[in-house]
Length: 323
Image 1 (cartoon, rainbow, N blue to C red):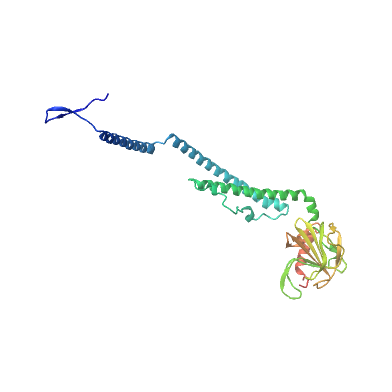
Image 2 (cartoon, rainbow, N blue to C red):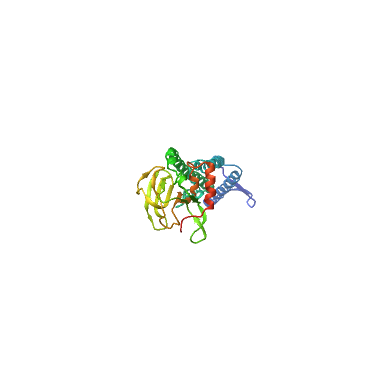
């Protein structure tokens, strides 16, 4: 039971009972409630400023762990980058050189991913830049590993077929040395008609009409025809493994397109057809669709001394092709 309250009235010199209306009670309780709310908010603000709630403490620990894990992941990714770079260098400079394959261009090894934004789902978070950077780094490594895997597939195929490649690679003179009167080299040479220096895309071997011409490696005859562009009667052999050889100005042709030939097979005879300054064979070697110097592909026929002599003589002589 609530105690009744009184107050002294000096006019009547007596105590009078204090009565409180319902309105006054509501106002009083409202003030007390509002004060308690304000005090509670202030207490929470001060507490939360200096102390974490259990949930915030757990989230802070989780974030710290994630940042630490990212730092470790970043270190691991950079270590993987270094290892992958070393593998790529050995692939280009050692394995592909031994198996006569062109290095893989950096534009292919380092190519990125095109199209839509692959990382849109990672955007909008407080640490989005960290997650996106890690995702891009991982994607780049995956792409480079895929390219490297395809490179090894190619090299494994070539290694397995090494014996066939050795037989197919041009490796002998197209005309036996005893029949050759003179030869002219690959490279910038003087045009006998125009009198100017121009690129000579093969080697010329001067020999009598009817001298046999040999296939310089195993392969398939790709062309056996009269070439109106200046080669005259011409044979092209596809040796596989990115090699082709061309034999021009022939007198006779002994093979047909599609014929399989072995190194040393007679494919025709020396002639003077097309734009030619005299009986000779114009011989070209193509690697990956580009002209290369045929003199580097006579290693089965020439000793080191004969090779040096041929190089010296070929540089002195004029070409026989009339371009």
